[in-house]
Amino acid sequence: MKKFTLIFISLLCLGLISLSAQDVTYTDNFEENHDYLTQGVEGTIWQGYKVNSSIGTADPPINDTEVLQFKAVDGGLLIESNMGDFEHNQDDGAYIYRVIPGGIDFEAQVKITNGHFFSFQDSVSYYNSAGLVLRNPDTAVANYLYFHFFEVSGWNIHSILKSTVDGTQTELLATVTDFPSLTQYPFMKLSRVGTTFSASLSPDGFTWTVAQTVERTDFAGLDLQIGLTQCNFWSEVAHTAVLDNFKLTHAEVAYSGPENEMDLLRAYAFNGRIIVESTGNGMINNSKVYSIDGREIASLDNVMDRRVEFDNLTTGLYIAVVNIDGTQVARKVVVQ
Image (cartoon, rainbow, N blue to C red; front, side):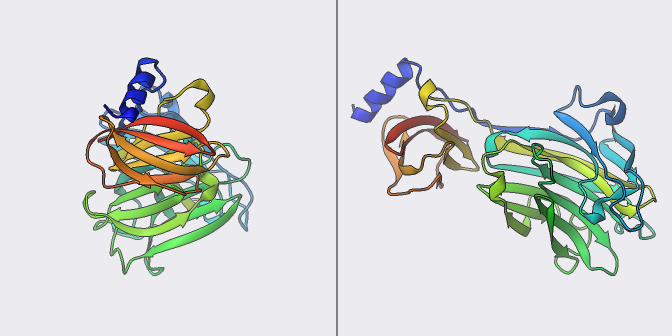
Protein backbone atom coordinates (compact mmCIF):
# COMPACT_ATOMS: atom_id res chain seq x y z
CA MET A 1 0.00 0.00 0.00
CA LYS A 2 1.30 3.43 -0.87
CA LYS A 3 2.56 5.75 1.86
CA PHE A 4 -0.06 8.38 1.05
CA THR A 5 -2.88 5.85 1.39
CA LEU A 6 -1.58 4.85 4.85
CA ILE A 7 -1.37 8.49 5.93
CA PHE A 8 -4.87 9.19 4.63
CA ILE A 9 -6.42 6.17 6.38
CA SER A 10 -4.72 7.23 9.62
CA LEU A 11 -6.10 10.75 9.35
CA LEU A 12 -9.56 9.44 8.50
CA CYS A 13 -9.56 7.10 11.50
CA LEU A 14 -8.53 9.98 13.76
CA GLY A 15 -11.37 12.08 12.41
CA LEU A 16 -9.03 14.72 10.99
CA ILE A 17 -10.53 14.49 7.49
CA SER A 18 -14.26 14.63 6.91
CA LEU A 19 -16.30 14.63 3.75
CA SER A 20 -16.78 17.96 2.01
CA ALA A 21 -20.48 18.22 1.23
CA GLN A 22 -21.72 17.85 -2.32
CA ASP A 23 -23.20 20.55 -4.54
CA VAL A 24 -26.58 21.78 -3.37
CA THR A 25 -29.38 23.09 -5.58
CA TYR A 26 -32.30 25.28 -4.58
CA THR A 27 -35.27 25.73 -6.89
CA ASP A 28 -38.46 27.75 -6.71
CA ASN A 29 -41.22 27.60 -9.33
CA PHE A 30 -43.53 29.63 -7.05
CA GLU A 31 -46.27 27.02 -7.24
CA GLU A 32 -47.57 27.70 -3.73
CA ASN A 33 -49.14 31.12 -3.17
CA HIS A 34 -47.11 33.22 -0.74
CA ASP A 35 -47.22 36.95 0.02
CA TYR A 36 -43.73 38.14 0.97
CA LEU A 37 -45.01 41.56 2.03
CA THR A 38 -47.16 40.08 4.79
CA GLN A 39 -45.62 36.63 5.41
CA GLY A 40 -41.91 37.25 4.94
CA VAL A 41 -39.78 34.30 3.82
CA GLU A 42 -40.88 31.69 6.37
CA GLY A 43 -41.72 28.37 4.74
CA THR A 44 -39.79 29.15 1.53
CA ILE A 45 -36.27 28.45 0.25
CA TRP A 46 -35.39 32.11 0.78
CA GLN A 47 -33.44 33.42 3.77
CA GLY A 48 -34.32 37.10 3.67
CA TYR A 49 -36.50 39.80 2.16
CA LYS A 50 -35.82 43.53 1.96
CA VAL A 51 -37.02 46.75 0.35
CA ASN A 52 -34.35 49.32 -0.49
CA SER A 53 -35.30 52.88 -1.33
CA SER A 54 -33.89 56.38 -1.56
CA ILE A 55 -35.37 59.85 -1.56
CA GLY A 56 -34.41 63.03 -3.34
CA THR A 57 -31.46 61.90 -5.48
CA ALA A 58 -33.26 62.53 -8.76
CA ASP A 59 -33.78 65.93 -10.32
CA PRO A 60 -36.56 66.77 -9.66
CA PRO A 61 -36.73 64.69 -6.46
CA ILE A 62 -39.11 61.72 -6.42
CA ASN A 63 -40.86 59.90 -3.65
CA ASP A 64 -39.77 56.87 -1.68
CA THR A 65 -39.91 53.55 -3.54
CA GLU A 66 -43.23 51.81 -2.98
CA VAL A 67 -43.65 48.06 -3.39
CA LEU A 68 -47.30 47.32 -4.11
CA GLN A 69 -47.13 43.55 -4.66
CA PHE A 70 -44.47 40.95 -3.94
CA LYS A 71 -45.98 37.49 -3.97
CA ALA A 72 -45.93 34.01 -5.45
CA VAL A 73 -49.21 33.55 -7.30
CA ASP A 74 -50.38 31.39 -10.22
CA GLY A 75 -46.96 29.75 -10.58
CA GLY A 76 -44.87 32.92 -10.77
CA LEU A 77 -43.30 35.61 -8.59
CA LEU A 78 -45.29 38.82 -9.17
CA ILE A 79 -43.55 42.07 -8.19
CA GLU A 80 -45.08 45.51 -8.63
CA SER A 81 -43.46 48.78 -7.63
CA ASN A 82 -43.51 52.47 -8.41
CA MET A 83 -41.57 55.65 -7.68
CA GLY A 84 -38.20 53.90 -7.78
CA ASP A 85 -34.93 55.75 -8.34
CA PHE A 86 -32.95 52.85 -9.77
CA GLU A 87 -31.96 54.82 -12.85
CA HIS A 88 -29.97 57.20 -10.65
CA ASN A 89 -27.42 54.69 -9.34
CA GLN A 90 -29.62 53.66 -6.45
CA ASP A 91 -29.97 50.25 -4.85
CA ASP A 92 -33.77 50.45 -4.95
CA GLY A 93 -36.53 47.88 -5.18
CA ALA A 94 -37.66 44.78 -3.32
CA TYR A 95 -35.68 41.57 -3.35
CA ILE A 96 -35.61 38.11 -1.80
CA TYR A 97 -32.32 36.31 -1.37
CA ARG A 98 -30.27 33.36 -0.21
CA VAL A 99 -26.75 33.68 1.17
CA ILE A 100 -23.89 32.09 -0.76
CA PRO A 101 -21.19 31.27 1.81
CA GLY A 102 -17.55 32.15 1.64
CA GLY A 103 -17.12 33.38 -1.92
CA ILE A 104 -17.58 29.97 -3.57
CA ASP A 105 -18.53 29.49 -7.23
CA PHE A 106 -22.21 29.34 -8.12
CA GLU A 107 -24.83 29.56 -10.87
CA ALA A 108 -28.20 31.29 -10.43
CA GLN A 109 -30.85 31.51 -13.13
CA VAL A 110 -34.41 32.72 -13.59
CA LYS A 111 -37.01 33.23 -16.32
CA ILE A 112 -38.99 36.41 -16.98
CA THR A 113 -42.46 35.24 -17.97
CA ASN A 114 -44.52 38.44 -17.99
CA GLY A 115 -44.76 42.04 -16.88
CA HIS A 116 -44.57 45.59 -18.21
CA PHE A 117 -41.96 44.92 -20.85
CA PHE A 118 -42.04 45.68 -24.56
CA SER A 119 -42.21 41.99 -25.51
CA PHE A 120 -45.22 41.30 -23.30
CA GLN A 121 -47.35 44.42 -23.72
CA ASP A 122 -49.37 46.04 -26.52
CA SER A 123 -47.76 49.36 -25.69
CA VAL A 124 -44.28 50.14 -24.42
CA SER A 125 -43.94 50.70 -20.70
CA TYR A 126 -40.66 52.47 -20.10
CA TYR A 127 -38.32 52.28 -17.14
CA ASN A 128 -39.00 48.80 -15.85
CA SER A 129 -36.40 46.21 -14.84
CA ALA A 130 -36.33 42.79 -13.21
CA GLY A 131 -33.89 39.96 -12.74
CA LEU A 132 -31.03 38.75 -10.55
CA VAL A 133 -29.17 40.66 -7.87
CA LEU A 134 -25.93 39.82 -6.04
CA ARG A 135 -25.12 42.00 -3.07
CA ASN A 136 -22.54 42.44 -0.34
CA PRO A 137 -24.82 43.42 2.56
CA ASP A 138 -22.03 44.32 4.98
CA THR A 139 -21.02 47.71 3.58
CA ALA A 140 -22.49 51.14 4.18
CA VAL A 141 -22.28 52.03 0.48
CA ALA A 142 -23.63 50.07 -2.49
CA ASN A 143 -21.62 47.03 -3.60
CA TYR A 144 -23.65 44.83 -5.92
CA LEU A 145 -24.24 43.27 -9.32
CA TYR A 146 -27.64 43.65 -10.96
CA PHE A 147 -28.41 41.59 -14.06
CA HIS A 148 -31.74 42.84 -15.35
CA PHE A 149 -33.92 42.64 -18.39
CA PHE A 150 -34.55 46.19 -19.51
CA GLU A 151 -36.20 46.52 -22.90
CA VAL A 152 -36.82 50.02 -24.23
CA SER A 153 -37.79 50.50 -27.85
CA GLY A 154 -35.54 53.01 -29.55
CA TRP A 155 -32.64 52.63 -27.10
CA ASN A 156 -31.63 49.25 -28.53
CA ILE A 157 -31.21 47.75 -25.05
CA HIS A 158 -32.23 44.23 -24.09
CA SER A 159 -30.54 43.66 -20.71
CA ILE A 160 -28.14 45.43 -18.38
CA LEU A 161 -25.39 44.23 -16.05
CA LYS A 162 -24.83 46.93 -13.44
CA SER A 163 -21.63 46.62 -11.43
CA THR A 164 -21.43 48.98 -8.46
CA VAL A 165 -18.28 49.20 -6.34
CA ASP A 166 -18.39 51.48 -3.28
CA GLY A 167 -21.26 53.42 -4.81
CA THR A 168 -19.62 53.91 -8.22
CA GLN A 169 -21.64 52.24 -10.96
CA THR A 170 -20.67 50.81 -14.35
CA GLU A 171 -23.33 49.72 -16.86
CA LEU A 172 -22.63 46.93 -19.34
CA LEU A 173 -25.33 46.61 -22.00
CA ALA A 174 -26.53 43.71 -24.15
CA THR A 175 -28.16 45.01 -27.33
CA VAL A 176 -31.33 43.99 -29.13
CA THR A 177 -29.14 43.12 -32.11
CA ASP A 178 -27.55 40.31 -30.10
CA PHE A 179 -30.74 39.23 -28.32
CA PRO A 180 -33.77 40.29 -30.38
CA SER A 181 -36.50 40.21 -27.72
CA LEU A 182 -37.37 39.19 -24.20
CA THR A 183 -39.92 36.74 -25.63
CA GLN A 184 -37.11 34.99 -27.55
CA TYR A 185 -34.55 35.17 -24.71
CA PRO A 186 -36.50 35.00 -21.43
CA PHE A 187 -33.88 33.13 -19.34
CA MET A 188 -31.01 34.83 -17.55
CA LYS A 189 -28.13 33.47 -15.49
CA LEU A 190 -25.50 34.98 -13.21
CA SER A 191 -22.50 32.75 -12.49
CA ARG A 192 -19.19 33.00 -10.72
CA VAL A 193 -15.77 31.44 -11.26
CA GLY A 194 -13.26 32.90 -8.83
CA THR A 195 -13.60 36.68 -9.11
CA THR A 196 -15.07 36.56 -12.63
CA PHE A 197 -18.84 36.98 -12.88
CA SER A 198 -20.67 36.15 -16.10
CA ALA A 199 -24.14 37.28 -17.17
CA SER A 200 -25.72 34.91 -19.71
CA LEU A 201 -28.99 34.72 -21.66
CA SER A 202 -30.87 31.75 -23.07
CA PRO A 203 -33.95 31.02 -25.18
CA ASP A 204 -34.73 27.76 -23.37
CA GLY A 205 -32.77 27.58 -20.09
CA PHE A 206 -30.29 25.06 -21.54
CA THR A 207 -28.33 26.81 -24.30
CA TRP A 208 -26.58 29.87 -22.86
CA THR A 209 -24.75 32.79 -24.44
CA VAL A 210 -22.55 35.02 -22.29
CA ALA A 211 -23.70 38.62 -22.66
CA GLN A 212 -21.21 40.29 -20.28
CA THR A 213 -18.45 39.49 -17.81
CA VAL A 214 -16.97 41.56 -15.01
CA GLU A 215 -14.21 41.14 -12.43
CA ARG A 216 -15.12 41.76 -8.79
CA THR A 217 -12.06 41.16 -6.63
CA ASP A 218 -13.84 42.91 -3.75
CA PHE A 219 -16.22 39.92 -3.54
CA ALA A 220 -13.39 37.43 -2.91
CA GLY A 221 -14.08 35.25 0.13
CA LEU A 222 -17.26 37.08 1.18
CA ASP A 223 -20.71 35.79 2.04
CA LEU A 224 -23.03 37.34 -0.56
CA GLN A 225 -26.79 37.61 -1.06
CA ILE A 226 -28.13 36.25 -4.36
CA GLY A 227 -31.75 36.90 -5.19
CA LEU A 228 -34.59 38.16 -7.37
CA THR A 229 -35.68 41.76 -7.68
CA GLN A 230 -37.72 44.29 -9.63
CA CYS A 231 -37.59 48.08 -9.74
CA ASN A 232 -38.81 50.82 -12.01
CA PHE A 233 -36.61 53.64 -13.27
CA TRP A 234 -37.63 57.06 -12.02
CA SER A 235 -41.33 56.78 -12.72
CA GLU A 236 -44.48 57.17 -10.68
CA VAL A 237 -46.26 54.63 -12.89
CA ALA A 238 -46.62 51.22 -11.25
CA HIS A 239 -44.77 48.51 -13.19
CA THR A 240 -44.92 44.74 -12.81
CA ALA A 241 -42.68 41.78 -13.53
CA VAL A 242 -43.36 38.05 -13.25
CA LEU A 243 -40.37 35.76 -12.62
CA ASP A 244 -40.28 31.97 -12.58
CA ASN A 245 -38.04 28.88 -12.73
CA PHE A 246 -35.48 30.07 -10.20
CA LYS A 247 -32.52 27.73 -9.71
CA LEU A 248 -29.38 28.20 -7.62
CA THR A 249 -26.49 25.70 -7.50
CA HIS A 250 -23.36 26.08 -5.42
CA ALA A 251 -20.94 23.91 -3.49
CA GLU A 252 -21.66 23.37 0.16
CA VAL A 253 -18.30 23.78 1.86
CA ALA A 254 -17.74 21.69 4.97
CA TYR A 255 -14.92 22.02 7.46
CA SER A 256 -12.58 19.12 6.99
CA GLY A 257 -9.39 19.48 8.97
CA PRO A 258 -7.84 19.87 12.44
CA GLU A 259 -8.84 22.94 14.43
CA ASN A 260 -5.50 24.67 13.85
CA GLU A 261 -6.01 24.35 10.09
CA MET A 262 -9.58 25.68 9.95
CA ASP A 263 -8.58 29.08 8.60
CA LEU A 264 -6.03 27.86 6.06
CA LEU A 265 -7.91 26.22 3.22
CA ARG A 266 -11.25 25.81 1.49
CA ALA A 267 -11.73 23.02 -1.07
CA TYR A 268 -14.87 22.17 -3.02
CA ALA A 269 -16.13 20.80 -6.33
CA PHE A 270 -18.29 22.60 -8.87
CA ASN A 271 -19.18 21.73 -12.47
CA GLY A 272 -16.63 18.91 -12.67
CA ARG A 273 -13.81 20.99 -11.19
CA ILE A 274 -12.02 20.94 -7.84
CA ILE A 275 -11.33 24.44 -6.55
CA VAL A 276 -8.81 24.96 -3.75
CA GLU A 277 -8.52 28.36 -2.07
CA SER A 278 -6.36 29.77 0.67
CA THR A 279 -8.69 31.45 3.15
CA GLY A 280 -6.04 33.27 5.14
CA ASN A 281 -3.02 35.30 4.10
CA GLY A 282 -1.01 32.24 3.05
CA MET A 283 -0.09 31.39 -0.54
CA ILE A 284 -0.53 27.97 -2.12
CA ASN A 285 2.93 26.65 -3.03
CA ASN A 286 1.86 23.38 -4.60
CA SER A 287 -1.19 21.16 -4.76
CA LYS A 288 -1.91 17.55 -5.69
CA VAL A 289 -5.14 15.65 -6.22
CA TYR A 290 -5.33 11.93 -5.39
CA SER A 291 -7.96 9.30 -5.98
CA ILE A 292 -9.40 7.60 -2.90
CA ASP A 293 -7.00 4.67 -3.38
CA GLY A 294 -3.95 6.97 -3.31
CA ARG A 295 -3.23 7.40 -7.05
CA GLU A 296 -1.97 10.86 -8.01
CA ILE A 297 -4.45 12.33 -10.52
CA ALA A 298 -3.06 15.84 -11.05
CA SER A 299 -0.54 18.25 -9.57
CA LEU A 300 0.45 21.90 -9.72
CA ASP A 301 3.89 23.03 -8.55
CA ASN A 302 5.37 26.46 -7.79
CA VAL A 303 1.93 28.01 -7.84
CA MET A 304 2.33 30.97 -5.45
CA ASP A 305 -1.33 31.92 -5.69
CA ARG A 306 -4.34 31.88 -3.38
CA ARG A 307 -6.53 29.78 -5.71
CA VAL A 308 -5.94 26.73 -7.93
CA GLU A 309 -8.32 24.66 -10.04
CA PHE A 310 -8.28 21.10 -11.35
CA ASP A 311 -10.67 20.35 -14.20
CA ASN A 312 -11.65 17.48 -16.49
CA LEU A 313 -12.26 15.21 -13.50
CA THR A 314 -14.67 12.30 -13.62
CA THR A 315 -17.33 11.72 -10.99
CA GLY A 316 -15.85 10.36 -7.77
CA LEU A 317 -14.15 11.00 -4.45
CA TYR A 318 -10.79 12.80 -4.38
CA ILE A 319 -8.29 14.05 -1.81
CA ALA A 320 -6.66 17.44 -2.37
CA VAL A 321 -3.30 17.84 -0.60
CA VAL A 322 -2.06 21.42 -0.51
CA ASN A 323 1.10 23.08 0.77
CA ILE A 324 0.41 26.58 2.09
CA ASP A 325 3.54 28.43 3.15
CA GLY A 326 5.12 25.16 4.27
CA THR A 327 2.04 23.72 6.00
CA GLN A 328 0.48 20.67 4.37
CA VAL A 329 -3.33 20.46 4.48
CA ALA A 330 -5.58 17.66 3.16
CA ARG A 331 -9.21 17.88 2.09
CA LYS A 332 -11.64 15.29 0.78
CA VAL A 333 -13.85 16.48 -2.09
CA VAL A 334 -16.69 14.85 -4.06
CA VAL A 335 -16.98 15.55 -7.79
CA GLN A 336 -20.50 14.89 -9.03
